[in-house]
Structure formats: structure tokens, C-alpha cells
Amino acid sequence: MTPFRLLILAGLFYIGWRLIRKSFAKKPPEEVRQVEEPDPEDVLVEDPVCHVLIPKHQALRLRRDGITYYFCSEQCCDQFAGQPEQGEK
Image (cartoon, rainbow, N blue to C red; front, side):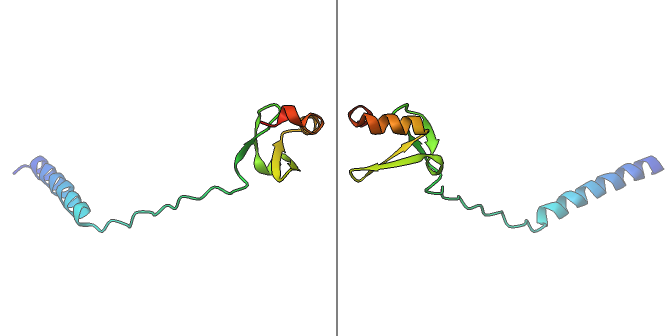
């Protein structure tokens, strides 16, 4: 055998050994991901005047007749408070 053939056989043996070793190696446990529940304050609410969606925790609130209304700005809140029959659905 020539040295070149021995070098090729050694390379093939090494590649085969790595493939066999890899197939029998223990696999690390898969990462378990938990789905985070959205924060109840982290929802979008609609302004009844201009119909803009805003995060609930950033909205201005007005409570009337047991119902809480959310607004994007003081102008919308004032407009709703001054004309409740137009703002309510």
C-alpha cells in the first residue's frame, strides 16, 4: 500500500468513527419553554370616541353607571363626558 492510500483509509476511518460516536452520544434534554400568559393589564382597549386601540395600563379611565370606559387622551374623555349619548354604543 502506498502512503497516499493509507492516508485516505485513515481519513475514512476517522470520519466513520466520528459518525458512529455521534449517533450513540447522549442527546441533551430538549429545552422546555413555557408560554407566558399575557398580563391582564397588557391588553389593548378601544377608545369609544376616536376608536384608537391603546394599552389598557396607559389609558385614561372614566367610570359611569358601573361601566369603565378607556380613552387615549383627555380630549376624547372630555368629549365623551360632555356628550354621553354619542359616545356610548
